[in-house]
Image 1: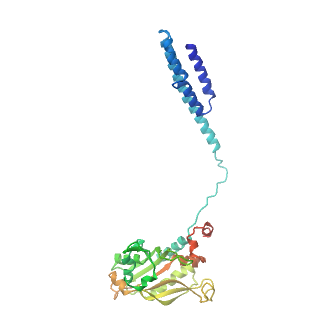
Image 2: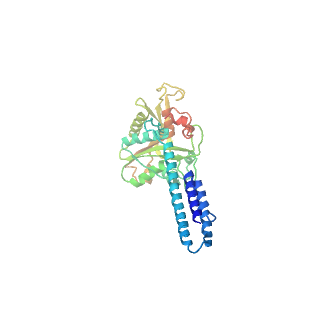
Length: 339
């Protein structure tokens, strides 16, 4: 029995030294410590020994078991350390090599133009106002002097959620909310944001962006509106740009105007882009309608104001020479890399 234990110990130690993987160590553990392993078999045969031999044999078996467990744990750690060192050597980084270049993205052209809007108007003393994109029909239409039966509602084919709510068709509701909040104090805000209409072609999208502006105070005139827009146009498109105002109609302004800028391609001499007129239409504007002022609590006999609104996509297309609005939303990297 004692000789058998010594043989098992010597064989065990040799196999442990030769083991090179965790799988081999697991197999050795089963071979020696398992229910049918060598140590278990010896333990079962101890009943055949003389009574005076059993204590010493039992002690040697326990020592063998403890030695095996300790040697298994030590060998397992040695293999783990060896694998770690091999992995570290494999993944070693040569810090003397040049670093890999980091590819940086850039702002989307619409984001760039929106930032330009904000910078220009903040520089003129405007505040930025925001509001919900799911808007009440009351704020989207009625507060803009468009009652339920007004034919001008057909100018904006809308996405209704229910009878009282819709996706806003312009950012004008933000202006109405601003007047409610600030009345009877003066108002000077722009309201940039996303709007929605049932359009989808080369120059229209069902989802697009607008920037609208509103000024309400005592003594505001059409001349103030023209001076503001001229300043904006020259900062956005260049100091050589001129503007002209043409009579138009919007339910929430009276009088209303369409605003054109001198063509940046031909300088006003006439080309294909401006249809040989020398002018390109970019926005609508006008003096705030007295009814709109009254609904917000302003006395139209004391207060006047002007409002304007323009599409960010329209401005971006003119600024960067883009002829199809849809490329702004297709996320083609080849297109975006140009900005």
